[in-house]
Image 1 (spheres, one colour):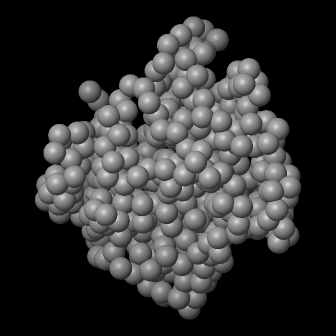
Image 2 (cartoon, one colour):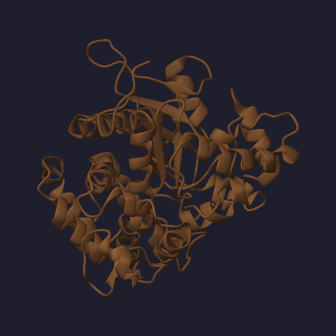
Length: 416
């Protein structure tokens, strides 16, 4: 099978909640939605395009029955076409969901669901993996059953491309919450953290710490070293909990960026789901162009990128989980990675600096208007908090999140 080289195509995955149209309460009917199109219960549905060919967007199930994933069927490079396809599929799903008086809701966390009483796990094909996870970690808490993310898959072909891509991605991960945080409200309350989804992500598998590590991947730059340093450790640690050997260390690995050497890609998992495909693809485009600039050594050499250990990067990520774009970065060496000589910057200011360095790329020029909303008004979490104005009542939450559902179906950004 031929492989994609660096930056030749990208896999994008967007996750959404299914909720009641009137109350916004979650509705665990993803299996019924898929059955409506497939004719029987199944995990994946690929709608046909106008020519009768398989479309560029696939629908897939998730761990819980109130979540559905839309993903690019294969790697894509034309994000304008992909954005249209995502939007059309959102609208098609919403049309089908009217049968149950339900609809899709964006963002990375439902604002007032109670996962302990409301969450239902996927019960159909391939559910043996979910059953093992549930037995080990109890998957009904917020960190398992109340989170939606955007995944970005970047290709590589061979060891050299992997080393360059992995080194660059590691350096971008700590500041992703500044662009992507969208989970400030959990259980009807402001949690005090702008990226609560990542806080749960960091902790939900703490029973087996080697699965997530410190979220920031270790400085490992070959397949053999990755196997020895990470996969072998995970395999050893999960064995006492998985005597049937159902879990595979390759996909159990839950760091913030996951290499898949079998298919030649690295999946970034630290991005909260945004309010609409336009927002997701604007953020993804800026992330890609930043990684591309690092891979091309426009800011700093590849050799110097490889020298960064986990701890200083994890420290910056920790601040981002709490404050997103408002997190202050005082590590001058980190700021220099992106060509800044400042003594300190907020993560939001750093992204503005990066944006100005890479804005001449055509793909970013097309996303400029949407990115300016994020860079000037703040992450979606900040815009949600500003819109709520300190009122976290169900009525206030309903009003703001109902507007977010409108943003999704109309494919427009949420303005605070």
